[in-house]
Length: 613
Image 1 (cartoon, rainbow, N blue to C red):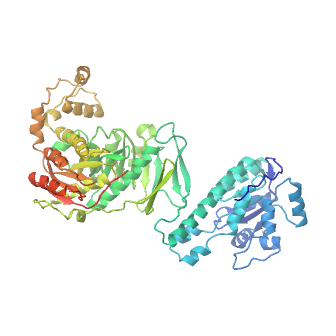
Image 2 (cartoon, rainbow, N blue to C red):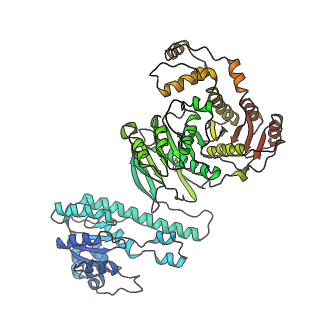
Image 3 (cartoon, rainbow, N blue to C red):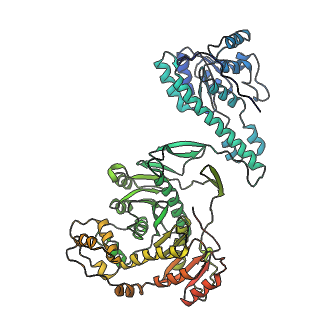
């Protein structure tokens, strides 16, 4: 077992003057300007290869590393800086008498600043280069100098990113050519993080090349954006991170997204993108707590839907994108209060106007019309979150997460749902209309991004009830079914005829209609509820509700896994369901098929389980 080393004592001075710098970078952004600044501050410049050439072309005096060491570059450049005069100059502890004596005896000059990038190994791999080329782009000398400089940060400043040049120059200007221990320690931490990411990428590449089913994986994350907190206020710190050398799937155009906002955006964007591909129609979703309250594609409204959604009083010409979001929001507008919206297509002014009057936290979409972006950015006093998704973003094949100190890995659920998924219709009624296929895809793709267990109902290209996160599948069917009833009864003549007082806000009208439909008021609640109307409404009786519900037909029912019993089909029979899509594979499949036959439902076995956790 290796033994630890005692700390080597030396000077603890914070300020350390820079007299000699070694620069060797592949990313030459800003290196000439930085080199000029160092030269103006009487810093001797050591360099290699292309960096030395670029600095000399700018008129700077540069000493080649080979001249400094007295040893030539060799082995096709594989050995340049691996020399005692380089590593001794970096690693010598300042203020330590023995180290200073060793340096004097061996003619080693101190190096106070090291500026370097590492060979572009990851980008070489990303280009699809062959194994030998990838191996040749594994840096050896660079990581050695990087770690040496970071280890000896009490005396050396290590710079690994052009964005750090300004901080070094600022400190040297303020401190007569010296840097502070605070900056050197901060840059050392960044350097060690870079080294870990680099080595992790190499280790992962080699493991994958070995063809192991479960290769050893080292993943490195770069904090991209500090978040206010995680799921709850005490969960600090919190951050949005990106994988090293991998972009994020979207950029922030406005607002300050939170942890749950970003989870909603990531799931909602995937949902609408897949819906767009499956139906060839603009798609939208309305997310709350990482499940869709609603999702839809652009299908024209009926006259009664237009009235129930209060669009008959608004002077907005519904474009396809606006129509898709309106339908998604109106699936369950009570649950969508404070949602995160997602659009598969360009957000135009009409869509922004629909969103403008809704209580919503943010939106993710591939692009925005300038006026639409202006409208949305003004929401919530300028705090409305606007994310622009990259439509060309390709996520990694595998997903990872940590829970309670354990790491989990799985292949991303990249199953593509299409009309072919619905080809195996196993019931006596074997025809699926084009509208039925569309609605079953809307339902199934929505459930792919809903917390399991989940069941959903759809019609007219729109989810009208999502039952999420229940341990019992029939409870999912009942929960979603209650939402179906409310959605359809909002179109009842007595609901449409409610006479609200002037000044009652839209969300209050929505909530009041839902409570009118439910009808289970306490006496105190009812008195308060009645104050919203010019005329106190007559109750909507159970008989009236049941009679109206009997007129609902053509509903599509989707499930994220097989139905273990016929009970969910029995529940669905009371909700106008004519079409069903489920994975199949239960020992009770025959029973479920018989139930569908009894109710004249057409059922497709998709053979695809869609659990989402």
